[in-house]
Image 1 (tube, rainbow, N blue to C red):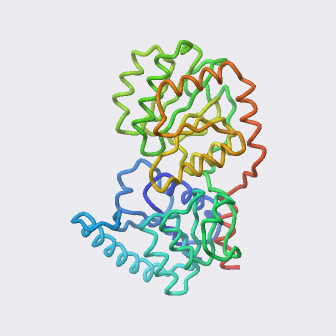
Image 2 (tube, rainbow, N blue to C red):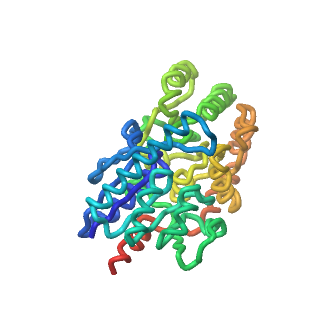
Image 3 (cartoon, helix red, strand yellow):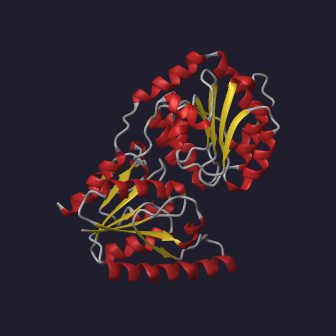
Length: 360
């Protein structure tokens, strides 16, 4: 069985694809992963299987030189996608969203090859909304997603968002030793997603550095590449007990000790919070069709997260929330327990089953 998997360049696309590949490894299958060329620059590990890269570009409806060149790159990627389909001869094509998946899934549909797409967010992206009409199955992470897809409910499979197999809870003392942290302090994890977030980085650091009880805190800050050097210098003279990383793949250590996570609301982050049952202060990225706002509301609705809108984000707002949490540990405990209201499936295995089902 030949399985072709195509995904975008962000961690939110690649990590679920990598989790699916991991679940499929025990099967007698040949797997090919197709990525956009720009993903070569990322630190996200994709050395799991054979990889091919194709050209892609961001396109808008405006008439501009950049958009015209982008259209040419898209057409080049479509030609490369056709060659991949002809040479690899897949039995199944699995798409994880983004523009560069469109051509491959389209060619698969045209050649009557089985297709399945996976949507990580509550609100489907443009590519997946388009491809949903062509695909044989649409796997979703949230039950609410069905309401955004104008297709037959028979095609929709609720599987959750696949996570890497190594993301399992560790013993707390093992994780504390990994970071060189002490027992009995309040541990905060800060992350702006795989690309980082300057606004979130700045507001959180200003809040914690001015916090009157910062001796009670231990901070793990995943800053992204752009802010890493600046924040590292600031933390060094702040008096805060901290560890800072530009990128940190071993998130199981951070999640195993985090009492609170302050972060954006990307689909992978939401799935990881659910798996580890950690209270969260979510600051959804305000653009990209408000995908993250809808993701954040999925946790807010069950009582596991508080939301600060991006336009309201400030050091003072974060400090107010921290004081409230430190004064009321019962509030945090209630947020942890609230995760019991939602089913957290083994998404990678469920998605792998849906893929393999095409071959009986």
